[in-house]
Image (cartoon, rainbow, N blue to C red; front, side, top):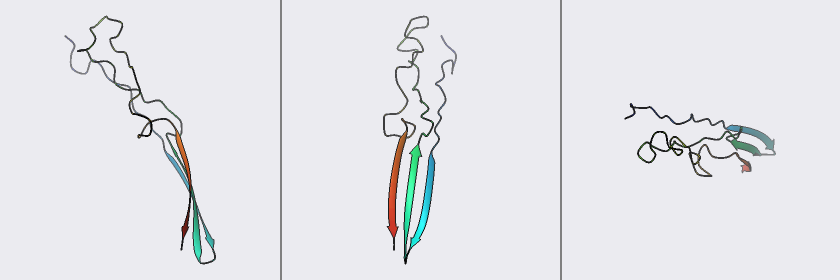
Amino acid sequence: MLPRNAITAPGFYNTDLSIIKKTKVGGSTVEFRAEAFNIFNHPNFGFPLAARTATVGSTSFGVIPSTRLPTGDSGSARQIQFARKLLF
């Protein structure tokens, strides 16, 4: 029998970056934007296999089989996007 919180998951790290440039053109404003999500591309691993599915001492105990979130969600692989907006 293991005590409570004997198995913990790895930490979660996510750094986002946004750069915005506004330029006046005549009576309008053009906005250029570059956004990067998880800029350092840090992997966020999921939870280890629970004690109910693997016994202590077995080769599958505490194994982390996947990353925490699927592609496209917060904390997934690095994503970069660019945008241009015309404000009038």
